[in-house]
Length: 77
Image 1 (cartoon, rainbow, N blue to C red):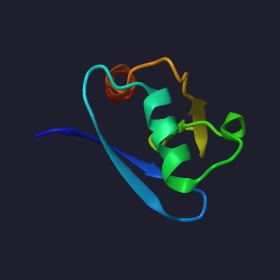
Image 2: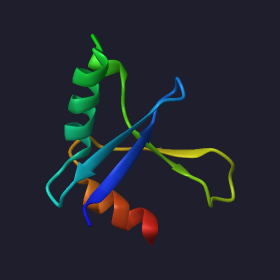
Image 3: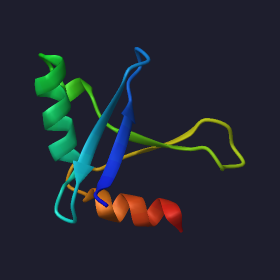
Image 4: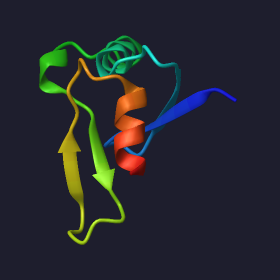
């Protein structure tokens, strides 16, 4: 079964991405920029929302060079 990342956009849409051990956050951002026709990609990033956190709506900004596998394992721990 492939790994799938679900991205929730601010406009209520969701986009799903299959990824492997070498896929980076930047790869997903590049794909989103192309699919959505984003003209100024430097103004966008991905964050993880910590739904089980004591603080409501805690967000962590993701490094574009980090792999999705690493992000996934870090957030499962």
